[in-house]
Image (cartoon, rainbow, N blue to C red; front, side, top):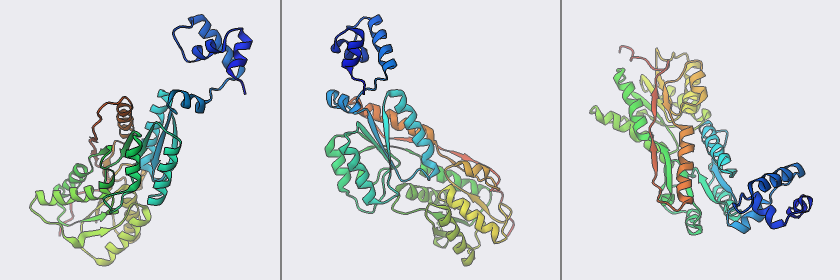
Length: 337
């Protein structure tokens, strides 16, 4: 391994001069800095990031904790955070929780042990209003930015999220304006705040036109394609006479659509369908899905902006980013009774 002393010996300068030049200190002449950097590159010198961290009190590392990269919503968020981190000279340690509380605790404690400069985390939602791991994070003084709505157990941290309630309201309103009187809802995991907010948007849109939600039209799905399949089979078996379905996300909507089509129903002629998220599959599904476009890349960029504010010791405020309803072929006017 090439050391500073090796570069200094090659050039006939002091180790201190080499160190200052590689850190762009102004008291080293520009020509000398350039010569030292060129020689360091030719010799294959790589700085010891651990040693630098101990010396300057920063590891130049961020922790990023998400449920799984298989969830297409997180792909663009991760890309945005990693791109900005790269530009700023940081590396990112990516960890997956699989939506398991115990695994989330392990991931966060490992990141704390690595002395990361900041942590981005999509929380694992739980029913309890307190979680020891989030109290540990607060005690550690490590800057934390939540990716998504904060639950009671982590509400002390700043967050960035899409406006799920308003988006779900707009999507439901779209179906109501098409004349749909009975709109089924395939709900997500209820401990998840984002799932609660999307359901509340659906309820508010009905109340806005003087209606109450029929509980028989609400089906507890989940968040995967398989969950959508199961909910759709229950929907068909119960013959609830709905003319439209709103799904909590695009994966559930795709599972629902596949099942309904296999049952001989036509979309949108027999049943309109709306998703949420605007993942790539939604646009390229055999019946392109009407859905809500979440600002995934902008969400990641906004999360990095908040992190930089925290690192500078500034007051940072949580953000809700606007969403957009994308109307495609899966919705149409309600069929005559």
